[in-house]
Length: 146
Image (cartoon, rainbow, N blue to C red; front, side, top):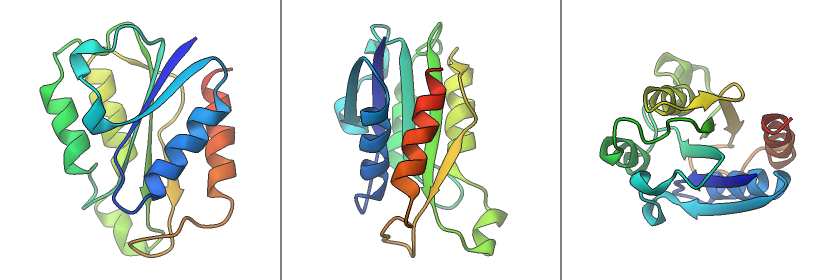
């Protein structure tokens, strides 16, 4: 199976989660920053995983731009999954999280979700990740390919 993990990261937390996900998936796996990916050239992959930090309840601007530039059927026939990094503060829930919105965009483009959108927690705005989050990301990724 050929997998692409796409991420955006401001403080390296989402990048670390993306790398943990990539390391946990067997087969041919690439982990790339969203700026190094063209949405029109994804059909070579069997599984696409997209992640971003949550900003105001949405994915980062770079990930939103990736989806805005994608052709309407960019993810047709692909297995897809979504993740985000987020704070644990109660007030953040008011705005929501990036992962469900990423999952929605992947499905709108024809992708088939292979697992629930996942959120991984950071301590404070710049992190670091809470203890155990990289391990949790690995377990989540393994579940995507079962």
